Length: 208
Image (cartoon, helix red, strand yellow):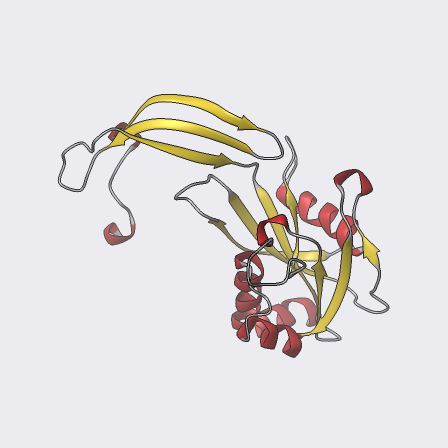
């Protein structure tokens, strides 16, 4: 277990200053700091810019009876001028508001973005999306839904959402990940988790 933990503590980080350098749709903070090195010496003082975001939740919507998954498609500004589709296939996801429980957020976002109410939520795991430059923390779930007659465009108008619901068979989704059509980390992690744990999920949901 010692190999899995760095051994450094908060006292091995010295923060000199923090200041907001942008506050808009996203918040960016400039921070000056130094940290203890593996040699035991202190590093030089350095300046970093951090993208600060609320915690987020993603949920893979899976129908175990039809062997289908509900994906969504919406415009993503970060993909402009990139060599990929600006309307990628993704799982449902959203930000956690103050005082909200993670599972409640997962259910709320699923209802807003896919018109489906998931049940029997299973925690896939938690991870930091890009800790070199952001504090973004994501909790991933898998939830049970009924994909019968699943179609339409959803989302909140006040949040400029225009979200197409895209039902896929499990095999279609796995193939989309393998060929790179699904190319965002949250969705890839969730799908690969389902590949590893699908039988456990079926046993849990269908043998009660």
